[in-house]
Amino acid sequence: MKNQRNNHVSFFKISSLLFFLGMWSVGLCSEIQNLPESRVHMGINVDLKEDNASDTTVIGSQIILESGVSGDFNALGENISVSSPIQGDFEVIGNRISINSLIEGDVQIFASKVYFMPSSFVEGQTKVVAQKVFLKGTLSGDALIKARKIYINGVVGGALTLNAHKIIIGNQAVLKQGFSCPHAASVIISKEAQIKGKVSYFDPKKSDEVVNFEQIFEGGLWAKIIRFFDDVMTKDIQKYWDFGSTFWSLSLFLFVWIVAIGCVFLFYRATPLLLQNLTQSAIKNPGRALGVGLVGLVFIPLFGLLMCLTLVGIPFAFLIMLFYCALLFLGKIIGIWIFAQWLVLFTPLKKKISLGRDILMFTVSLGIISILSLIPVLGLLFMTLVFLMGVGSILGVIFFREGSHVLYIERSQSSFFRES
Image 1 (tube, helix red, strand yellow):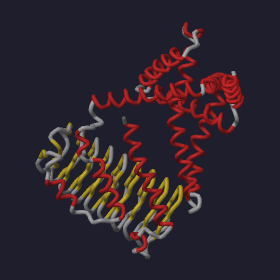
Image 2 (cartoon, rainbow, N blue to C red):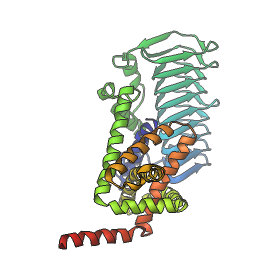
Image 3 (cartoon, helix red, strand yellow):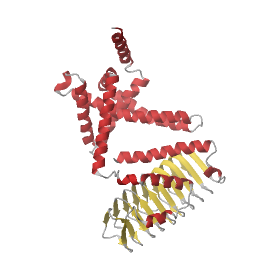
Image 4 (cartoon, rainbow, N blue to C red):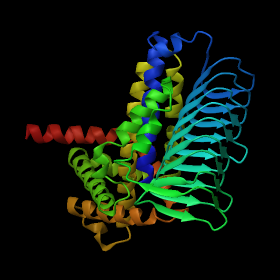
């Protein structure tokens, strides 16, 4: 479930990136037009080492701020690291956000993981919407943090509202006005933590405290996006679809299982010889399949990002990303299929070739891989190898003409049966 939650953040990030790239390139983004003195930086890896005397907007994959910013700082990227002071507001969307400096204005963050390092200091208001938040620095103003897990081992000077499933208050935490959290939240407080105010509880669906806190923030470019995605993620549907619920987690797992088996059945009925060829080539030369899969996994999205840098290349980049998403989905299924066929060689069923046997072994392999994925390190390594094997086999058919003779045989057999 963790990977699926992170995929939501990645989907929002990539969609916003492509949208604002197109709007900015054709001159329809009024937020940027109204700020002629602002500076916009775009690229794959953006490292700002010179001081910026105006508002700064950055769009990129890896963003590092090593110079001071006199105005506001807006960013959209994969990983964002801030190690220099910012005199204005801080509004970012990303996957992993790390703050290790002074921010004099308000802070608004939508991300997967947010780290307030020990040297971080926020003078204004703070609003964070994330999956996990680690606070070791200082928030002098009021703060609203909405996440699944929150770890606090720093200082909060203002009113603190925590809307999370699990809250951990460390031994070095100093909460000068206490905090409020939902009734159903799991709260762990260290004995050494200094909580000078009271601890109150509220109902997230009926609390006026959270609603009034929303009015503190002004509407900036990224703030509007944060509010939009915040509303999307907190609709009433959440009370029916709680990703932490065991029932819905199991239901989603079974749904994915059934979809995977259905896709394999369709592939088998459409091109049985092609699947057989993919399996044989991967088992016969696993090193080649792993190498091709690794190269394709790295360079296909890189090529798509490079195409985004030009206005003409944006439609091609969109098609490349669609192909890449399809490759990620099919790579897992084909990888598990290859593992299933390899597993058949060590069973008495290896001489009984049938669709029922293959579907049965695929189902068993899917269960084995699901169990192995629970192992922290070895499970991840095994899943990666299976995934790369599937991706490499698919790319081998597309780019290296592996299996072209199989397609020819299938077409020959189809024409033979039609004539007869």
